[in-house]
Length: 371
Image 1 (cartoon, helix red, strand yellow):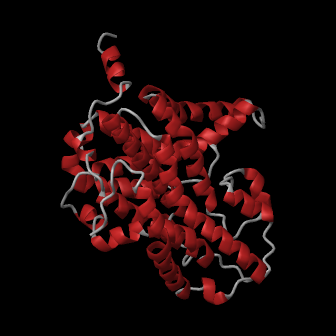
Image 2 (image 1 turned 90 degrees about the vertical axis):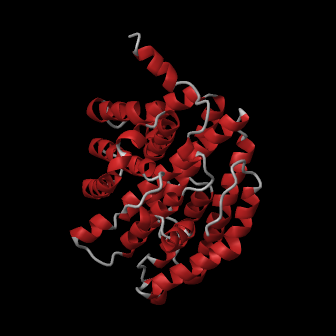
Image 3 (image 1 turned 180 degrees about the vertical axis):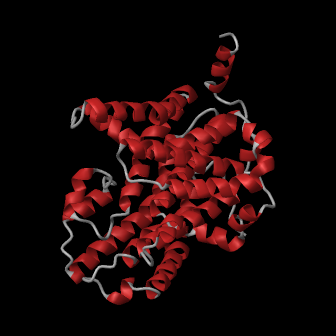
């Protein structure tokens, strides 16, 4: 017990300094990983092949989970760096930064979708557009309306809800944030398991809260790995020397395990394991290296794709719908890829960058532009 208590106190105390590996304004590997994730999502939605190999390599669900883990890792890292350097977190500045990054393009796409809904008479319910605008598409009540245009906003909804709730806890204290993250990762699945086995078909307030928290599993895992990196260099000492072997194993295991739709007992634990593999991959590759996979993901062109990943994610839905009520030139390969890339580039360079410059004014850690 004498040895356990100091270890607990150590991990439940705010770090005194930012570790060297995180003391940088730009992490090249994260854009490379975003590129990998968006390629998986786009090809998954494009459905160019029905083979097992294709669906394993281009798993859109795994791609979204990569985005979730990345988001949790990066947001927690940036907020902790702010808290350590200035002894506080400005929630106002945080929400302004998130608004400038997410909302302009998200709302532009919704407005365009509403216009096209009238032009092509696809009869999408106004409820869908309202839920998209309010980032509530992850709730089951919206699914009955059908949603070809903004179906992908379910993941944005999960992230936005996380951004609203969890930074408040970190501002309050490191300990409270860590306890909440651990609760989401390890206690919530146990509660839901007991519920499925012994108390099915519940609709009480506790049920609703628990089922909201489980949606944050991937993001919370990213948060946990960020906090772990602030507290320990265990990975640097023990795994980094073997990165050239470990990296392919992590990717292969994540793909072969197969990220599943929520929510079953099996999916909770399988998805948690996959998110853990993604988190390990992120931390290992924060350190520069010469192995093939690191060089590929930090390649200039690959990082450019990662830089455009949010734009591509938003626009790809319209070009992978395979809806006969829409003009075929909009969604049939290979023209859909040309439209997707072209509009994503125009969107980023002539619309989003204006808001990204505004976002940077509210950042303590200034982003480093891509070369």
